[in-house]
Image (cartoon, rainbow, N blue to C red; front, side, top):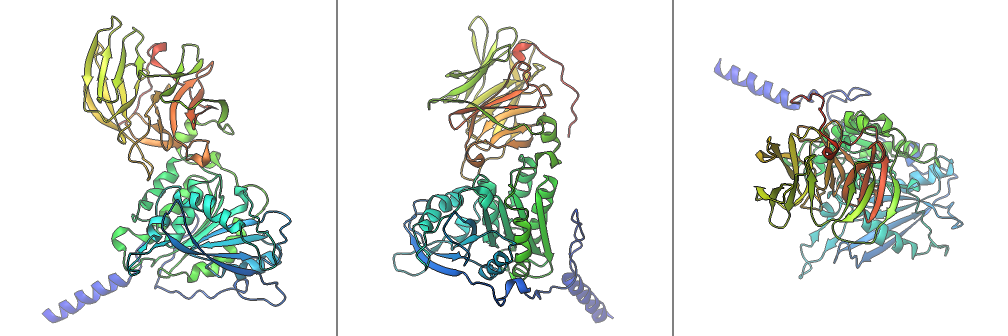
Length: 541
């Protein structure tokens, strides 16, 4: 009997282990279930067809990068037979090379008129040779899994110009379009998340993304994407995702659930209103299904070309973004500044905005008292209108912004040398107590610090903070709920100052990349120097 019980227990355990876990449904269709299968035969679009002109493939070594120093790699360039060099061609930027039978697919679909003339550029990851020539330092994860614009800059500033220095076998110059609407990215696994990052970080350069079995896990922070996509104002991107329910590289389950991470990214993109499609299968960490769906993915990504891919901010389900943004209103340039340190925006009681070289960071109460910080010493002071100076806080990490809530009850102090801000209770005599590291911010992968931390409140008590990510918008419980990227360099420029202004205080002004921009908002600012206001009730959340 004991042996029988043990046998039943082992059999039950084995059955449970073999079962496909029950997964939540996507918003459009049930997720796949059942036994693992990697049987995904190629369609006719991925095979040589009679009468279809065949493009050329060129191969080049590349080294001498300044962005990824000391690396060596290979570049493959596909040039379709229809390319005549009479105008710049569209671009498919592929990571790890021209996978998924891309040259054959492009031959067939360009021939049928379903794709524009596309030049494919396959970029392998770099290796840094060792002193002995053995065991090089492989840069693949470093270059492709990282959440920064380094990979984008590498292609834009180094690889594309290098390719344009080459000629086709027929002696034609290679001309690549610089229009982001004419550029698509693609890759699998680490190359899959890399393809997404190229467009996410630089939507001013890439607008279409094919990501297969992407490693949206914690290799180098890719697990943050589902949240960042939900919080960030939608970007002008169109995305096709592919993954399988048994996707899991055997060497890396500790970094996260690869399958669920792709589902999470897809759900985040749907939540935020992106034009996104997916193909879910039951295979392992394999490119078989990706190769099968690649032709249809390209049709989707290039549908209605040359109509531009646009941001669909009106379709986001982010409540914060819907409450604060006005439909169809974008950033408008106001002025260009001479490069200086400590340039900040200032606003008067009539909403007039000026830009000043401000050495004193402060916010003022209606009675003339104000709070200020010494960034170098990390201290916070209350300065009375008779110039009496009283220390109120210390050991702050380079405080860079102070703002009083519209009801005059709380003071926010943003610590630019960290990713936190501190909240203080304002007592009846304007002294402070109950200081608490209350505000939490996202920080870009390449930065250890928040940015200037300049800040202001809107009429409902939301906090707007200038950061390296753009403008972070926090709720009254100290949580980042929305991110408005900078309008410069695809959002890659830091925002150094932020203020509400305009006649009705419903325009948001920022300084970014030594330029001033403004944006019509659906909410008003409420600086406390205009008089305290009663804030609406707010729950614990």
